[in-house]
Image: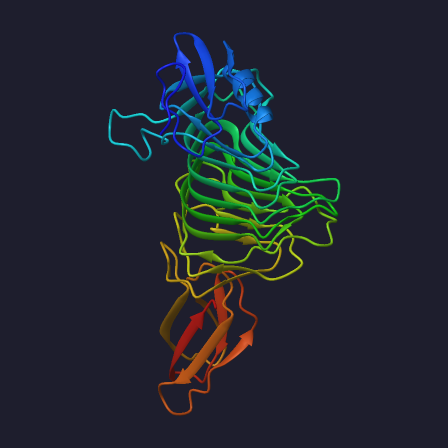
Length: 378
């Protein structure tokens, strides 16, 4: 670990080390080919260090920086903090690198636009609800993000695209999100949000959406997440594009825990999809009394669910025929996809006499003869 100039040691393989000296922000170069950067604005100093770095890594000290303007990511430049700190990964009373938003309303905190092979790691991005988006990717590819906390922004994390350039092949690992909206994916016709991965994390929204697919987003994968909301909608897709022919294909919510704490809204709303959308191997829960957890105006199917908390994905019971059509409450979270009727007494001959709906199945059987009914959502 070489030391030179001021008594600040720069780890090997870093182009710059950014730290505080009183009220001034300094960026110490790790190579004699790079110039010192110094100033009172953290964002200005960091942006200049990024500009000066042709390719490499920048390390931020374990300090709290007043983050006063948009930081612009650059291809092949990765920014590392020194841990995201309380209340996330560090022990109580220990802080890593914290960026505290003091910039104007309506600005993005960190923007990776038209970049590739960039990254952001090991820090807390803490807003004051005035900034627009904590972290935004715009037409970015092959970027990596890890061990981040992004909180108290109207939108904590947004992926969008235009100009025919997708935002894709980006990976997010161990990311904590908290905002009015936690995650928004927003593509356009010809520039999609696709093939991104979100692995491990605890995401929460205060009143908007935990995950909001606005339009032109497909085949993004989600693994091992806890999704939580105070009031609003946990997951909603394709909300502002009623004539979008492509829609959203949401695949592979693996081992995810979808929890809704609020009332008065649906946990999952599907307005329009072109392809069948799946939640694989998931937990869904937090039912409120007045609205269904799933409101599928488009195509939605849950498969291989471990459990649906507070709801049933399969149910059964015994009925006695009346010779007329009977209405039986099935108790499932959605319309059954499979109904099985079996004689318990010879000659009961039960059959489905009308299509099932969100609340009931309709069965006719011989008078006074018992039968078994079973229903599933597959």
